[in-house]
Image (tube, rainbow, N blue to C red; front, side, top):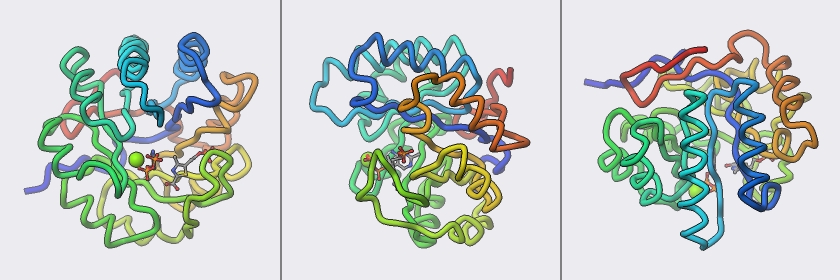
Length: 235
Ligand SMILES: Cc1ncc(COP(=O)(O)OP(=O)(O)O)c(N)n1
Ligand SMILES: Cc1nc(C(=O)O)sc1CCOP(=O)(O)O
Ligand SMILES: [Mg+2]
């Protein structure tokens, strides 16, 4: 029997860090504090460097910040980091995996039923179904618009969001989401809008989050469930 959450349990703005935009610990933590203070649904720590020590240090500091704001911290790619952080911070820590990363089934098995584990599905209903069957907490699709962070990502059509609605999982739209494109992505069905540049590339991060949430309309306030069972502070 499936224990997947109803699609209403993850909803709002999903901010993703970038190690070029936020190159040192202080910049990273100050920027994330600003975003968290404005009310985001999820924060993803995305660091593509090979610096394991930095990732542990920054991941640990971000988990402490996220716990204070009762917002889940999703680690990109790195299952070992997510496991290590989960040991210390519990199910506030989750993982996002792409098609070239550790398998979703392995991630789910190692992180347990309660952790948020999300999957990249590009523009494929087949990948979406497989991810749903392997225990994904949410399904991510994109890129929908021109992306400054990942211009080489394959384009996707917003119609995929409606096509996978029957799977009953929260749908994430990613790639070129900003205050101008957010309403379109939202109307196409995305419960979560994942954003790098339009949050962390802006000089005033709190203002950027406010503007995005305004454009997202109803339901953009955090309503977050950890993993597949427990609900945390809704603020
Ligand atoms: C929410 C969300 N959606 C998609 C991605 C992309 O994941 P992936 O395809 O593994 O690419 P990288 O981010 O690892 O370059 C994501 N990170 N988050
Ligand atoms: C990390 C990532 N993944 C994508 C995908 O299409 O899978 S697009 C992307 C970058 C999103 O950054 P921005 O909000 O600056 O466009
Ligand atoms: Mg990846």
